[in-house]
Image (cartoon, rainbow, N blue to C red; front, side):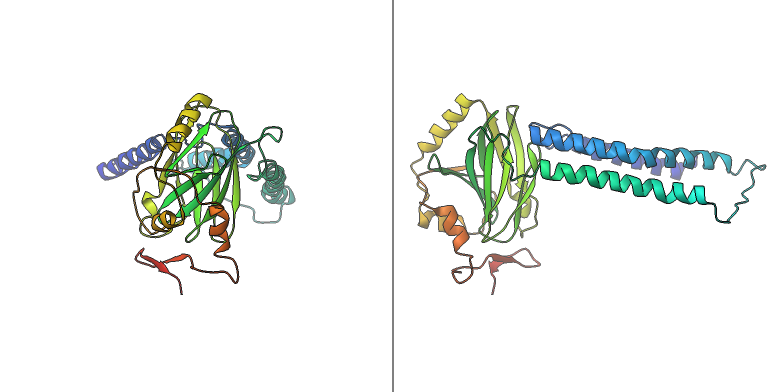
Length: 302
């Protein structure tokens, strides 16, 4: 092998290794689920890959055989294709991929409804209600049943269904906690929902994955999945906060800001979540969502 080609191959191998290593840096990769939703999604991914292997494996085997058969040093090999119509080959070439697409479509169609993020994980158990509000560039989580709110931190008890109602007080965002579930969009004037459950304790990374301006990269948060006792202790700590989240405090918080530290609020403006949705409703718009400019700056859209 020529030195230049050897160095290039080594660089590609090292780059691939670094990319694979990066998968474990972020807590909660797709292949290491921490809840039943991500476990089902991972299994669905494996099943889809298994179905596609029906085509992928023969293609790679034939590619290797063809390269070996028609290699430059094999002078006896002759490529003399017969381009006349041959129906068994046509059925194989077109029929097998078509059958796989239909098989995948039916398989994914069924499971898409089965794992709808709006579906309760266990209808017999009342979930913990959380309201998630996307701002520039932070996340505000409100616990309406406990009258507390926290910035850039989400605490949940293990083995307890969580129902997160999501909206945006700015441009479109998207909430994801890879260890626990897929991403769901947050849109001004609308609400979406995500049902999750953590069956293992830990600290799981979450963030906005929809570009929303200059502070997008820092719009991240930690999800604390703890025992029921530790969750109660966390809630008591939040309730001891002397800072209420009234209308004036919320307006200051909603202004664009980056890397906002975890902040607790005890006492939340009544109906805050509904008021945020209502102000973007038709005929009742007090303030438009911030429009992200090319340079990342945000200002009220005109």
